[in-house]
Amino acid sequence: MSGCADAARVLSPYGHGWVVCHAPLSSLRRGAISYDSSDQTALYIRMLGDVRVRSQVGFEPERRGSHPYLGVDFRTLHSRAESAGSIPARRIRRLFSFQRHLLSSRLLRGAPHLNPLHILDEDYCGQAKCMLEKVGSWNFDIFLFDRLTNGNSLVFLTFHLLNQYGLIELFQLDMVKVRRFLVLVQEDYHNQNPYHNAVHAADVTQAMHCYLREPKLAQSLTSFDILLGLLAAATHDLDHPGVNQPFLIKTNHYLAALYRNTSVLENHHWRSAVGLLRETDLFSHLPAEDSLSIERQLGSLILATDISRQNDYLSRFRTHLDENDLCLGHSTHRHFVLQMALKCADICNPCRPWELSKQWSEKVTEEFFHQGDIEKKHKLEISPLCDSEANTIASVQIGFMTYVVEPLFAEWARFSDTRLSQTMLGHLGLNKASWSAMEPEVSGSSEEGESESARATEEPSSRALSQGSQES
Ligand SMILES: [Zn+2]
Image 1 (cartoon, rainbow, N blue to C red):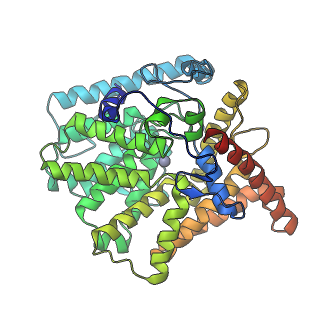
Image 2 (cartoon, rainbow, N blue to C red):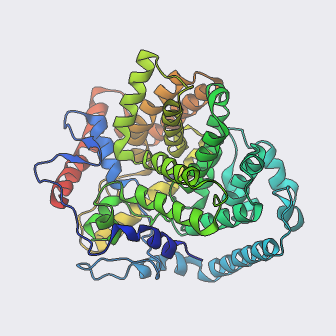
């Protein structure tokens, strides 16, 4: 089942007759970040805004894709994954479908128990259940959990957390609706995306849980904040197409026109989540203003994950910490901290233990390079970091860690100076060293090494800028 049509219904108030909104040619601004060519961090983030999400570009048949000048049917671009092991892949999908059917039919028979793992208990074993006992561990292996739950990690993990925090009871949520909502959310992630799929959403939700338990947050957050934080984490990349915003813009995708080239993906994730909330009537028992408030705040959290706005959030965070004026008794400050927590959760891969971190790095780079391959094939300009001949996993990771992850987590550790923060910074340092050992020419600490690194990031940035100009 796809939530796309529902998302489209929700989106319909934006009207017909899509008009691409062009930014002034003279502007050096896209999203909320200014490009100052002397600011290497801003340039790198700008680049990531271009390239953060690459993948096997897939627009489902029912999804409205529009690539008029390319004349490409993007549905066929998935053929690689299909041909690589089509029969087993199809069988696995059928099995998953069966699991979903089983899940839905049991739910429809109206047999929800308070134990969120009752289906797992029957069909599988205690292993997944055992793992959930340590769901607050930073070493939690989401890949293993996903295998143990037969590809249903997002549903089981999120349900478990909602239950564990007592949110289902407190907000009098209908268990059948909660499950249906989570199953629909999980299904609306594209499992053919190497990175931006439901396992990433589950991983971000698990990280969010770890942050919510940190003393400063645990002492001040309300149950409403926790509910929002978990829902935002689970839905923050909903229906991600596996390509980035500039790709959607340059191929004239309707979403780019709909959201006027601004936080295109994040707006879509948010509106898709709202579509599913409304479809499942999850909060229909609450007063209208409360459910609208949930939708609005969910949007504010998801929109904060737009990496092109990283510097805005980071400088606001830094200012608050410098002035020591974060007062978590104020709902606006708590909301800001939730935004920062979600941003950290979203890019925490390099702060995980190497064995987990390495897998994420490989997956995200696979998405990057796949987009580059498509751009190459269709004679489009290859987006920064997407050219597999000019980049390596190590070079991409080292730049990402240096210019995006380290600055964010350094501030987070100032805010929440705990063992977890130190653990994350420790893994970050070790992981960067491991990638550096594989890519000495990019990561050397010598002046020569630094200039190499600068060139490695500058060159594609220039391309990104010129690409931005063409688009504007
Ligand atoms: Zn994400």
